[in-house]
Every structure is written in C-alpha cells, then in structure tokens.
Length: 154
Image (tube, rainbow, N blue to C red; front, side):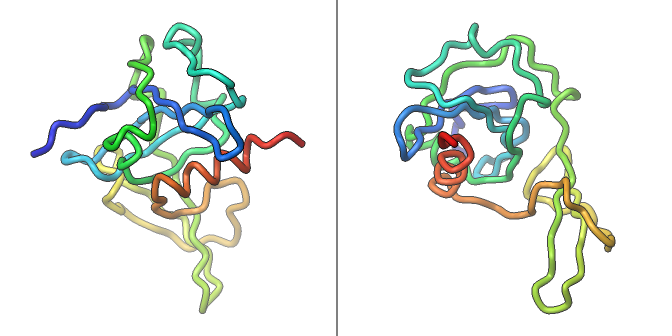
C-alpha cells in the first residue's frame, strides 16, 4: 500500500491555468487512495496561502465539491499547504450528486459512501435537482480547468 501525502482535512493549492492558485480540501479519500472528495475554494490567490489564513474556512465557503483523482497531490502538482487545524469530519459531509441519463433523460440523485468516495451507495429518480453538483470523477487537470473557469475575473 502506498503512503499518501494527504489525509482528510489536508489543505492544498491548485494552480490555475490563468496564474495564481485556488484552494482545495480533502474531505474524504478511498482507503487505498486514488479517489478523493474535495471542497474547492476561491478567491484566486497570487501566492500560496498559509494554514493560518485558511483556518476559518467552512463547507459553506466552498464554490464546488467534486470527486476526483489524487494524482495532482501524489505527483506534487498540487502543493500541500497543511492540515486544517479545526478539522471536524462531520462538518464536511459527502453531498449527493446529480446525474442525467443521456438516452432516457432521467435525473438521478446519487449518494456515495461517507467512508469511500468511490462507492456508490444508492440512487433515486427525481423530477429535478438544479442545486446539486453534477456527478462525475474528474482527473486532476480537469479540476484545474474547472477551478480556473470558476475563478476567472468577470
């Protein structure tokens, strides 16, 4: 089993394609790594923030919450800032995600395991789910693109 450079509550920087950084927080990880649930934050920062600058963050401050691969953390592309001092797992839940089937048009709410973000625990058909994050598993470069787009100046 590989030694992971992160754990739940780890803060890290995400380099933006337009320059600067966004911030991520590992909220869940699979037992053997590879897939993580991350909360993503702005604003765009020109320099790496410190743990002390980020310690008051909460899930409500997040601009996105995604399931993604951990390769950016493993290969060092996403610099680790440190551990959130006020980390309390129960305050950073695994949210439900929405999936729209392309052929049938059905809308599904998907719930993943709170202990393993790779395990789908269940899904239910709903009429609409506009406020939920789309389901998906993103590579680290896609997360960089998503966050770059999210934090671009208006």
